[in-house]
Length: 187
Image 1 (tube, rainbow, N blue to C red):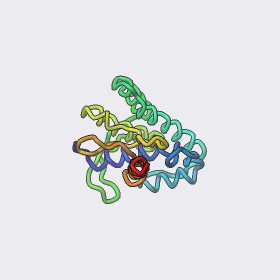
Image 2: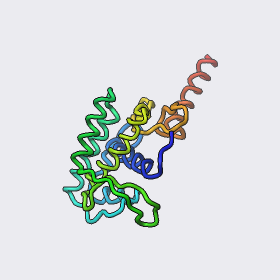
Image 3: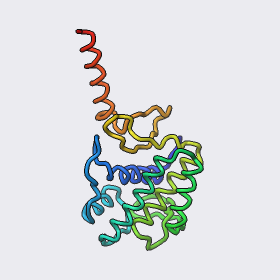
Image 4: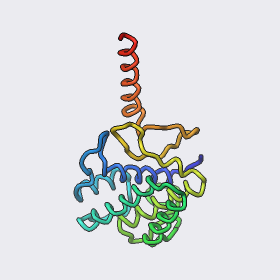
């Protein structure tokens, strides 16, 4: 599956945003706790054109996060499409070409002057919509590790990824299975 740079960045931001609600394996506190954490999220994803952030922004971004979490849980493509259509429409989507900050031409889906929540809903909603249109909605997954459940987008060629991170969740489960087999073999 060919995914352009902007769509990949938007997908990464969506996944990171969803996972702020369940920080780390086994859940945990909401890591989008205040405006400072929201600013760190913006900087981590190099989101341009974001001014001062306050409590109103935090509440709005958390609401967008909840909708993205529902997108990962959507059972049917029609339900996912309905959710994404609503998000993108409510964000006031205004596709426009831009070449800012040293990046080549790309499309922004949020309107000029949009809030951070509208920006995330428009760009992230469109990125997820591209997966639906490509017939790839099954790439939206949750980690299969029993104590994790973090969101991820499986971009492997054969759609075989099962864990949010093979070096942590995947390796932890493989080691546990190995130890169980060894224990069983030694009686």
